[in-house]
Image (cartoon, rainbow, N blue to C red; front, side):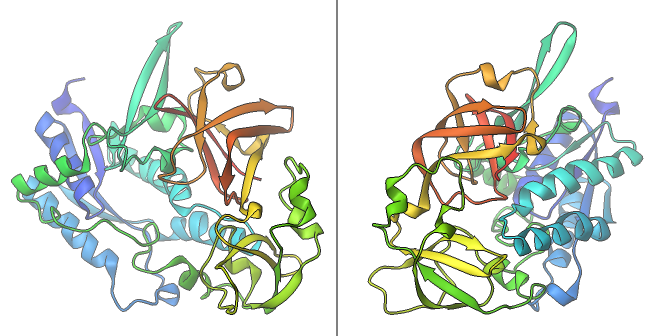
Length: 385
């Protein structure tokens, strides 16, 4: 199949990254179609008077016009609400800390959008992510891998950690080999309206609203106690292994109240509004069943740090099955975006995968995703229990 007859449907978000990605595809000679995904317009949980999706869709349209490529707007808001927003509320209500960007990529951009693109006769989809796809041929079979973007500061492979072989086989990342400064320079030279546009800071597809504000419009406030755990508590003299909730078995001092444990996450500092402490308070654990929050003083409180975590086998995802993860060494992992990769060892039984870090990790929370790397390739991921 020639490049000129290969149709690529690119997700134009109205930002500079997808704009330049579209330009690069057009320059290579692909048959490019730009699509803007309208995924959120529920005014009941939009507290800003601004309407970011309208602004973004207009910018995306102008980019398509500049590049002389066809452009469409598709409405995926029903699927987004069901697969992302409702799930996110349920997770927080259960005391977990989901990552909406990871879920959005897995459930919307590389699932619903991919299927929609196929109906538009797409051979591939493309996005403006800073990541790369590789292929490995072995025994007459091709395996697809996910590599970090060249720009270490902008690498977005973590957000793509749940993609599968089929999704990777149908995806192009045109800017994965570029640095952000180079992307902006290309946009300026081509006169793209998004060249100087700031990167989005809101929730994936929802816009300029902070997560706590968003949650408080759907989750019910429930007054509960804030319990202080001292840093010299006996619990820190013991090895609790993979027991995430040892905090809840300890006695502590009630120092105030909160508006609902499901609004908070481990490692959080802001939002407690409790004064009179020698050092800032950080959340060590939440108990949504009894509506309790456990806190400690100082960012170096030992309760914030753990060396191990587990992932149930059902929640463990192999990105590239070319590798047997249990037979590999020198693996590294991260539990949040932009965290430096950390040395980790992995073991497993029939029910769980166990991860032991060389150095203690800060603020590990249920519901977060751990991504596993071999060199610069992300080979597996899982939902932390």
